Length: 537
Image 1 (cartoon, rainbow, N blue to C red):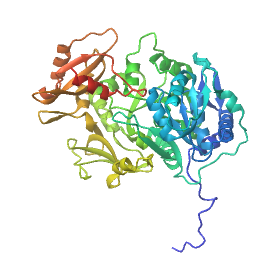
Image 2 (image 1 turned 90 degrees about the horizontal axis):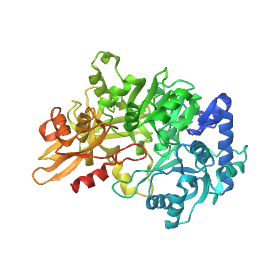
Image 3 (image 1 turned 60 degrees about the horizontal axis):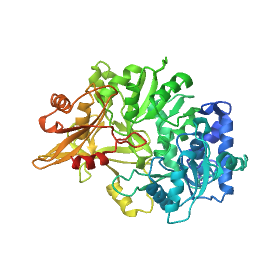
């Protein structure tokens, strides 16, 4: 074919960016509700205007293309505004976990070289202590009070609303010159060392916002509750996605069963995402926290394999749960458990077990599969174990200032997750464990996920985590840490006997510890703490 005269130009090629969704929404959905927080109601026109002013204020403060702007904020309106405004002035957004310690925040601010930080008043003292520990230049600090939630400003730094008001509402957005341009910098949890800086590009985030509505079958004008922290994979990219659908983001500062039920009943929430701990919270909510509602709430759950018992219980309460899987390095979820209607007649327990699988690749991914240690496809027999690997446009650019870790992660042309899984004949992936969480007892591999799934059927168990405990005879044995439901009782012998009825003897926990489980702000159980504790038992 002769392609003479066919030219890529401004008329037929625009670098992909999620910023385009809000620009369009300001025209198409101008009067629709975009952002809700208590009494605050922002239309898309107002939302766009505030984002533009914030982008302008950042530019006036000296922020230029490629600079890093950090946020240390819960899911309040300023966090959503920053999601668009920071890249709209050409900068890179670095959302920092609000639960991190002083030393780690100092490291991230130094490593990412943040020039400015938006900081919630509640976390300002910790951030200022972190700045005192920094080795490099300190960022400009803008304080974000939240009087609506009883968090007044301290007043020692410039106020967010005053800073925003200094911006020009007619500021021209600085759009990416190349869709490979960096959009966001997110840090891993760093449980085995310093956190790594994961760099996202505009193209990947845009494709996430296109693939998610297809997989989740999202309608126009959904009402989405922001439970997933926006510092966790940028809220799975959902904040960037919502304007494409004219959806409403309902901010949620503090996650509780009462807050979730209130938002569903009072604000008409139709969708949200959350870790399995959020599902447990809903299932075990008190009668006082529960509110009636007359519609089905669609939920994406990820962060840890959900127990089939939890999925079975929450399905009876008006929630339709879809299991997804991903990592910080993949912008969030990249596999989905697609339900086959032919399975509708299976018993509830069997359906829940299938729904707990991590599933198949989202449409914006090229390939997600399971391979052996030679990067060869494992048999799809539902038994052979290997590592989940993936490739596609929603895989990170790499780890900031860490070429060795980047090269290792991309070995063989795939991103290596370090998650162990089996693959079923239909291609569906099911996580066995993290590589570091497999328990090797007397030469036998034990999946902590399998043991946890069995224990979660116990009527008194709210949450549990199973880790390896050193053993002189077997090398390692399973040790279960159990968090009981409020008012429930159980003892070690009872729990062990319950597990033995459902598991092979060598998989049965040899020690049970009752305590509240340590968790991250995204609801993941911090097994590294439990592993350390198990060694001392």
